[in-house]
Image 1 (cartoon, helix red, strand yellow):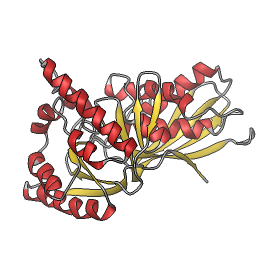
Image 2 (image 1 turned 30 degrees about the vertical axis):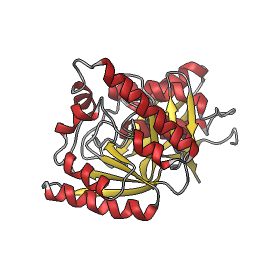
Image 3 (image 1 turned 45 degrees about the vertical axis):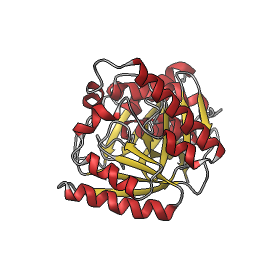
Image 4 (image 1 turned 60 degrees about the vertical axis):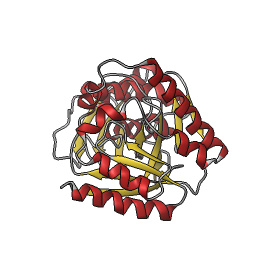
Length: 310
């Protein structure tokens, strides 16, 4: 990017956090939905949020209380930048949807601000700053939404590293968002309590099968492993109609289905776009039968990464 650039606009896609078996460490991006941030250089060594659009709920405009603002504060401090940023946030992801809305804002802000640096950082180098921003919303640093937004596709996100996981391009997901809100902190509170050792063993085996299945393009390995025995049983009661929606996906031939992020959205994986589209309609109908309207998102599992918009 030109050192003289004073303004940039960036888009970060939504995401499916956890992918069921990878709590807080595995996710994939979603095509067609996301947040956009406009970043401008300002002379003052600070971060300002001048506008937030696209949400009926008022979000914090104080930078340190906003995911995008805190991410840029972390960037400024780490790089000792002599200038600051003014940003405008355009929300395209519903709040409390389980589609990575808080992460998308901070990733879009970082990608836009990064384009204004004399020496832009790599997507991997932005990870720590995005974690700092995400922690504002979730109360902890976890990269299962941030990683796929930064790199695209399926990403394994540890505390210090992002690793892209290969997955066949033909594979698609149906992600169905019910018209309901489930706040991340509430969803995480449902996870308190005792977990048996055998549950951890089973979940570890399932995660291993999903990762190997993706890399090998082996759908039967994924089908054997895409079953969350730790988190889903505790969060499912928070989502009206979940059992029926999941069963509709499995009846339509899903490799597996579970809760997207903290919910209430539900995702299912398929070997083709056509199967995902058919199942998405069936999943939405199951929500409707439970008295809940919904939106359907059909996306390649190897979805897009955040980018600067021209």
